[in-house]
Length: 122
Image (cartoon, rainbow, N blue to C red; front, side, top):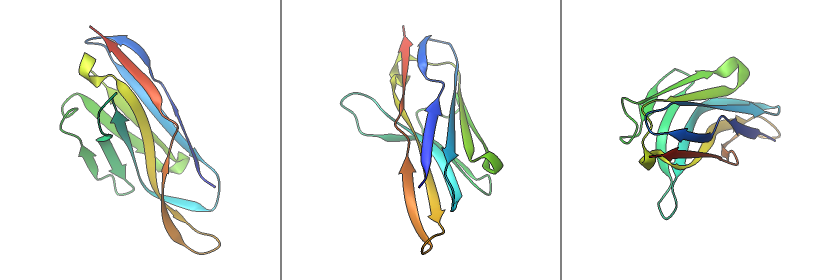
């Protein structure tokens, strides 16, 4: 079973920065890609950024130019550096991973973390 654990959320003033981390644990799997989504109250969950095992990166429009995603697939870990934060960035940030589970039969799953709250004050 794969577990994703996020850390690094919190309260920050507008213009500040935060670094989120997500680590995958477990055994018998290979991670194809990892990323971050966010969901603000009353809004749909949206892509923040993703990075696959070939280092292909995709950013959501709302964070382009202000965020940087990176990964260490040897440690099953992904990071999100967010700069120039604005109140509209306030949301629960969820880590996700597209995973190949190897046993008993190889199959694809999408795993989600529990989420970490990011609050940006004006």
